[in-house]
Amino acid sequence: MEPIYYLLSVSYTISMIILIILFIIFSIFIAIKTDIKHFVHLYFVRLIILIMEEHHIFVEQKVDESKRTEHEKYLRLAIKLAEENVQRGLGGPFGAVICKDGQIVAQGANEVVPKNDPTAHAEMVTIRLACQELKTHNLEGCVIYSSCEPCPMCLSAVYWAHIDHVYFSHSKHDAKDIGFDDHFIYEELARELHERRVGITQLLKDESRAFAMWTESDNKAHY
Amino acid sequence: MEPIYYLLSVSYTISMIILIILFIIFSIFIAIKTDIKHFVHLYFVRLIILIMEEHHIFVEQKVDESKRTEHEKYLRLAIKLAEENVQRGLGGPFGAVICKDGQIVAQGANEVVPKNDPTAHAEMVTIRLACQELKTHNLEGCVIYSSCEPCPMCLSAVYWAHIDHVYFSHSKHDAKDIGFDDHFIYEELARELHERRVGITQLLKDESRAFAMWTESDNKAHY
Image (cartoon, rainbow over all chains, first blue to last red; front, side, top):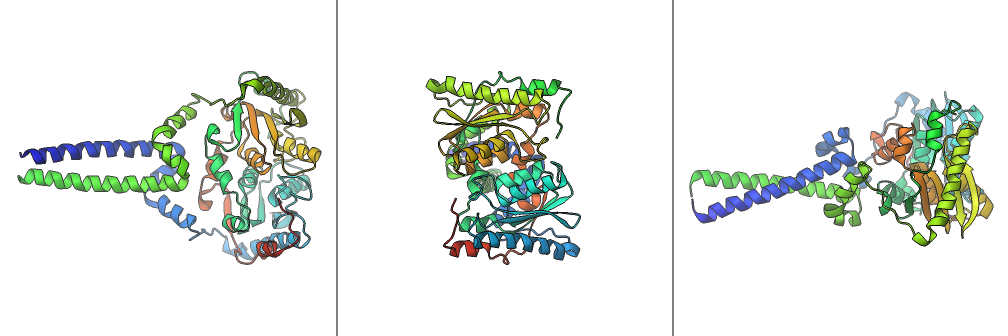
């Protein structure tokens, strides 16, 4: 064997080993950051979907067509609430409606400025009203219609409230275009504590008895 | 050149090209999913930190040591509020305190069950109280002390309220151990719309005039 080919083979082998190691590290990284389901179809589907979504090429529609008219009716009401909020110079251009069994349970609009409450997004206001109306903290069986795609705070509240479905009109990209950008919160939530924009520090980690007391208590308010 | 070495070289080259393509795809994927800063130090730091955090090996402490006693004092109050909430059989074992310029502005505890409000986590309750107290929706210059690491809803609210720093005692892992698991919300927020557990559908995307009206309005309630 000529030396040049020998050298070539060795350098290829080393390069390949390095690349394989990098590939394995990346795979582990993604396996940790996502879950197994993601991991399995990552190579085939996820990248394409991601790029399409990033460029607003598609948003998948999952609509029960027989009920589309009903959903559109309530979403139009949420939009009307958003428009009225602007007309009246109240909070931001956001409205929401919550329905159960085809009946309106609550409706609301953004009240951040008039109520001095940074948590008073339309969805939050409406979730709280619906819970008062139904006298429960569990909105299972309810649907929320929002004039805009919920921000991370509102979407988290949707999960805590066990709402079944979210219908929205304007996307978060539209919201960004008029100055309501929630993208940075998605990024922040995905980061480790010490990498976040807001300072966040754990102290006295072994001092609280609250969790032990909760575990031992017979008087728990379950939720 | 012997055919076997020729074959070897060709197969190595093809393998390398495939691996390089995969490597580039993964790099693009991660560059999209994270931001540039992450991307730059990903190869050196991030994987190790991630594994350490996943296994609870470390939580970085960023504490101004000269103020540690003060921070611990207010955090102890938040813990006391959490413990009292359990003792009284009210909401979950969570308490929070908000301070500005070393003075307590507001304090609160979890009120999900007594108030029928799934959004009434200790931090949310306290943020809302502090805003009422200070007559603003902007808590810049404020620090929040929470007996437990904020969930995605509360952390988002921290960002919307522009709070400067979060100090907490129990970690989200501790919370999970006693039945308060918010991990699934982090996962859900990182997913595309159609991959989420809750149904989420865009309808009437061009029908709302709310955003255009907001842009044109001279009467905007800025926040």
